[in-house]
Amino acid sequence: MDKLVSLAKRRGFVFQSSEIYGGLGSVWDYGPLGVELKRNLKERWWRAMVHEREDIEGLDAAILMHPKVWEASGHVAGFTDPLVDCKQCKNRFRADDPRLKGTPGDPETKCPVCGNKGTLTAPRMFNLMFKTFMGPVEEDAAVIYLRPETAQGIYVNYLNVLQSSRQKVPFGIAQIGKAFRNEITPGNFTFRTREFEQMEMQFFVKPGADQQWFEFWKAERMKWYQGLGIRAERLRFHQHAPDELAHYARDAYDIQYEFPFGWQEFEGIHNRTDFDLTRHQEHSGKKLEYVDAAVNERYIPYIIETSAGADRAALVLLVDAYREEQIEGEQRVVLKLHPSIAPLKAAVFPLVNKDGMPELARRIFDDLRGRFNVFYDDGGSIGRRYRRQDEAGTPFGITVDGQSTQDQTVTVRDRDTLLQERVAAGRVGEYLAERIAP
Ligand SMILES: [Zn+2]
Image (cartoon, rainbow, N blue to C red; front, side, top):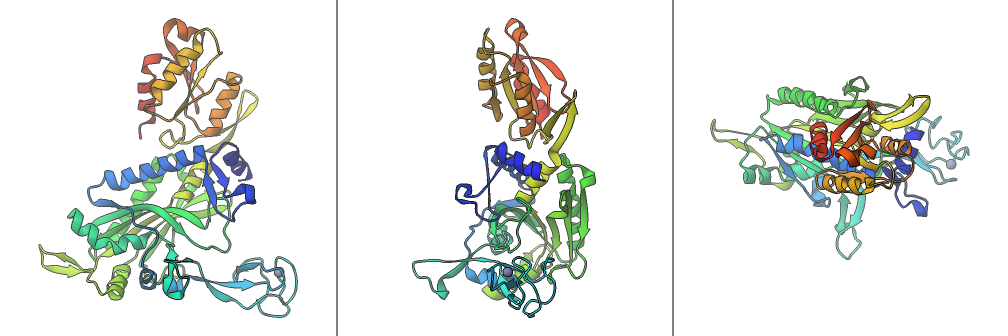
């Protein structure tokens, strides 16, 4: 994991937030390559969920919502962790922190950070939502929250979307957006962060059809990740045991990946029953029933949710793609990213900076960048330039050599097989398109 974190920084995938000020805890910035990777991931998700399906609509709800939303959802009362403070070193940790031996509040219990005895408070409940104030006055009546999940923006817009899109149950609403949680023990690089992005789809179904749709989405989501090239043996389902299951959920599965720090979830598929819409109907006083005019039935739909962390999924892609290989006695580090996800699709290299090679290379580069995110590199030995692109996960290297200026062909090197093919300079765009296709 350390090697990946260092590569991510060196090559511009992920930087620590506000690094020149010492960094901000568990908040990360995506650099030039990272932002491309994450955009490609989100675009593929949007295409699979919204564009390729007639029964799902897109939405982009605001981060700030009416405070009553979080009362209805249960977040104000229940989105809490029991926390312990050390009066000596001022550290705060979860009451279930594995480093903690003994009972917090007990005079014999030691602080796991500073080692002092009897300095820990008894556990206190702490809400994980970020609070702020709306308007000029900082008073209780003006408190609002940064949303801790994107799902509620979908539930409160369920009727708006239903009516404006003329969808019928079963149908879904998809959204990509930021959410915030004041996590006390964040960590593992971008895995658990205080600001994160979710890719969520809420699918509204008739009660009774819920388990069938649950199974459908469970299978569909796993297939989607495998389609991104993630190794199947590193993916698995984890079913929530009765004690892990949220009180409103009827069934829940996580999709887990085998990270260097263990199996961890990065998407959840949940059968949320009619809990959410029922709560919002109660708290808003607005009827949220679905009326099926054809059979003259009314009901509150059940919801099947697929909730993915965009940052976690991006981390899965990086971890899964990272390889160290021996090539002719030399070690190379390569990111074997699926071409459709790779930040750069190709790099163009003039073999040497003379004899008409840079001119032809520039022409090819200018032609390609209208269609693909490509990179031009004329610095250092060709082997070095290949290595740099291997580390960036660039699937193709296009080299203009002595022969190119004679017969207008270039070599195209495949990142994974290392095979080189001669391709007519005018056909390179087509060649890439065929191989990058989703
Ligand atoms: Zn302490």
